Length: 264
Image 1: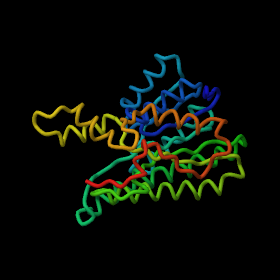
Image 2 (image 1 turned 60 degrees about the horizontal axis):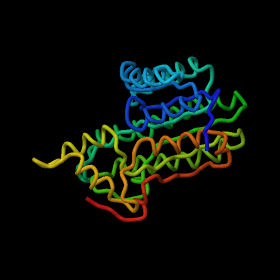
Image 3 (image 1 turned 45 degrees about the vertical axis):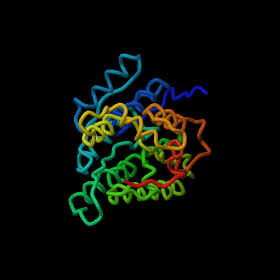
């Protein structure tokens, strides 16, 4: 199926690399005009240049997702630059591993700020524009299978993602009357620069990073390593008119990882 996003205007957060960059590039390749967010314009511009080099339309916006004032400025800049808003893809997130007893207030607050409060604020700032336009829209979120599973040293992250999915369900029943859908994607381990850095940190001396990633990240029912493009494809589908009857759902893209229990 060819996904057609021609004429659609999209904001993608955390799009300087990894899943966010793949989504922004896929949206643009499907015809959307994309506002690419990162913490700084310089980081966002990396993805913007790739999109433009491929013939797509994009521009950079910046915001510190722990700062409400910069989030508001970013949303205004995105909507103004796009001339409206049809798709919002809340992708940005952080993970700070810590056992429950070691999860201090700073870890908890920062995790909740980026993973839950920021998407909530972006939703609150963009939904009114979608309603006013009267043409429907798509509110999308990258969550995690950690939202529905227990994870050692992941209490703050798991709680933030579970809260995000609850937000999505509530939003779906509130905005459906306006033709706006709300859905989240729950990825498993995905081969991103951030994930590679995590594996680099735990790699033992003499151990191959590629072999460690292959063995660890393919420990799922299908035995495959999930790539950012696997997530981006579903995001593009959910952003399109083809998904008009899908709302309030959590789509697991985890190669079956959510079917089994895992620990440390």
